[in-house]
Structures are given as C-alpha cells and as structure tokens.
Length: 263
Image: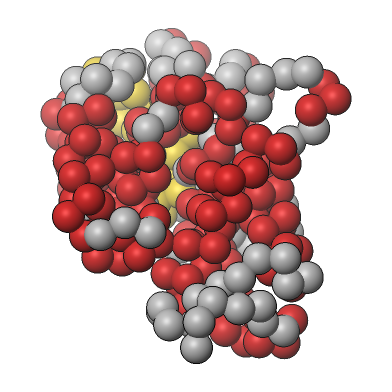
C-alpha cells in the first residue's frame, strides 16, 4: 500500500508506542519541551485529519519520523506564533543547522541505522552516511564549556567524565548527592549539567537540578536507566534525555544540541 491517510484507531494502535520517542526527537530538534511537543501535536492532528500521508510500507517508527520531518521541513516555521515577532527555534535551525544535524539526531539519539535515516529523510543510504559524516565533523566545532556531573555510580561517572573531557569540555566536579550538586553549582557555575535522577543518599537528581535552575539558567541533560519516569506527559519533562546504558554518541549529540540552543 502506498502512502495514505489512516484512521484515528489505527494511529493509536500502530504508532502510540513510538510517540514518547518522537517527542524526545522533536524536543532535541527544537531545543525545548514546549516547542517540541507543539510540533508533534500539530503533526498528529494533521495525520488524523488526513491532511498528511504516512507510509505503510515502512516500519511504523520510521514512517512516523518521516511524516514528522516532512511537516517540519516544509512548514515548521509557520507552526509558531508569528504575532510575537520573535525568532523561533525553527528559524535558528534553518539558518544555522544543516540537515546533517537531523541525520545525526536520528542516529545518535534515536538509534536508527543509515538505511533507516535515508528512509526517514527520503535520501539514499549513501547520502545519509555522508550527512552523518558531516555532522560528526560539525560536532567538533561546537562550543566548549565547563560541566557538572551529578551521578552516584563511580564507574558511570568516570565514563561520563572521560567522554566529556574527550569532547574538549572541562569537568568542574562530580556530585553523588543533591546537597553536593547544589554546592558545586554555586561554587563554580557550570555551563551544562549532566544528571542522573536517583542519587546515593536517596535524594533526587531532579530536585538537585530544580535547585540549580532556581539560581540561574543552564542547560540540563538527564542520563537515567528509567527514562519512562521523565516521559509521562503529566509534568514538565526534560528536552534532553539519555537512556542507560548510554552510547557515547548519544551524549555527544545531546550536549551539542543543548549548547547550541542555549547559546
């Protein structure tokens, strides 16, 4: 069957399991939860209304991402409230971010293969691989900053520290508790925070981040073995979320996006 509209029931049954991951991708693409969720909502409304088509020849997740990027690339800027006269995340992405960033996010954050990325972006596999190579080169040019790691597992913390240092960033410290994290952030304001949600003394990495954000604005990336706890849709959710065990490329992509949009 070729690309065609689908019913609301079919949408829920077939695509609902992949919506949390599409929201994660959209948030990383736009740089915020609010804007990311807005694009996903608009895409789903258009899909249910039959205004856009989705391929039933592709795997459901791949087809869903392809439909979403089709809307993003063709009319994303128009989805924002133009009345405010402000530059939108879509404007910044179109001007500063090549399509290779989309390919990189699909690979590093969403775990898609080059072949699947080609299907999502409507290019052949060779072109998808070329886009990924370009993105890798671009990552090396990203902003350098100081980092606070909030993680109570020494081995994991060491792995993150090594990865962060390899990217050219400076690690200010590693905090294992909420109290330590807040104290370190006050002593040396980090340019970015990488945080787990469950800490050594039973305290919460989420609470630690809330305390830090209460003092000043800083991009945050959560790294957790329980991402579903932060993707419920019931409360404010992070724009940048990485699952454990993590792929180093996931961290690299998230840091790049967080610094890009925050800067």
